[in-house]
Length: 169
Ligand SMILES: O=C(O)CCC(=O)C(=O)O
Ligand SMILES: [Fe+2]
Image (cartoon, rainbow, N blue to C red):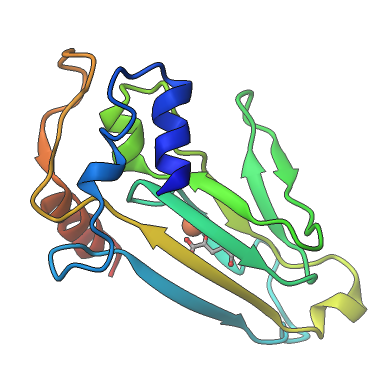
């Protein structure tokens, strides 16, 4: 909630509660979830180009991501290069989600990221664990461009998530 308030401040919204007010994280009408991810050791005969977690951006408002020291997470830069998001002890990663990008008409960008397989043989044998807290707006919030533009069609947070899940799974 503090992060959402700070983002609203950073974007110079008059109402700094504008985003946080739409996130009743513990209500039944909110799809915020925590996911624990476990990546087993990579098999020896892994094919070139195989990946631990394919390129995507997260769907909601923000993701707070805790990763262990295995490494492999990469984020895409504005010019399309993949940059290692090296684990830093005690640090968390904050990803902007697609709904927040739509809401802010691209002022905040949902950065694409992926998890690649380590190159060193020894590291391939290690597992990787991460913990992701996917923060979502309340299900019934209609996400429409806050600047009044029509760049993105209004969509409810729930419908957006449901359409993403049906495409993914
Ligand atoms: O495991 C990770 O570090 C990233 C996972 C991820 O990006 C996701 O589940 O959306
Ligand atoms: Fe992700």
